[in-house]
Length: 337
Image (cartoon, rainbow, N blue to C red; front, side, top):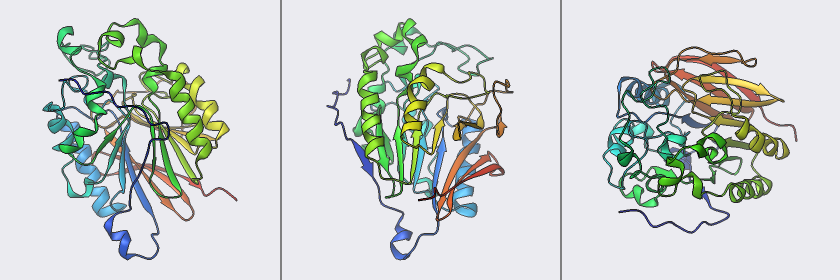
């Protein structure tokens, strides 16, 4: 059965407590948040390695995260969920990330494959599925399943919607954009129209109004914008001008700390107009090599994930590979009042 669409609440947001350990500590010195995208592939070798790396970093290096930020394309093996009881929710999410250190809220963005996009299927160059799914099987899938709160009956960690905000602490807030809606090329494909709750039925204006109001009202010191598609990237797909034209001016108006995305199956750090753009789409299969479109502080094409560590002096972004080896880190200092 198809889920019943839920009415949108314009100021929809989450607020979550810190880990239990924080309840007995007067002052928390640092807060950790993990982030990764493009991970859901039925627990294949690369996905399993990154999941284990996250556990090692949580236990032995940085400490347990208070949340994990999912950057979209969460169920890549099939191109989205086919029902609220789809087995891929187990094989691509529950089982790979069953470590006790990762039993924290996961807040997820939607990616193009969560809208059932399989336009790159069969392409070994693109690193997607080896075989394409029959169209009749593709269009029974829907992003409506992925954003349905009843999925939390299967795993209470799961949170997702098209666009929303998450206030992790008084000083840390993440804002989620549904960037597939902004990509004009997707509207040439039939899946944008034939899928329940598909792209053709989304309202870009409504989303932009939500983000404008939410960012304007935020009092957080650290404001991170999350989306699936990169604005700046030297990876396989590169930056998306449609997304950049919508969101980068918004970021600059509201002093957003950084943008975090997936889609390009790699890890990158690019600075544009003093703002950091972090790509962390290496949660399982990666694209090999880079095209020098603009200067980058860091690039890696091995599987891995990102960690943000907030402390009284700033926020440091760490990139780790599938062996829990630190590859790069960058600190954004606390803004001067």
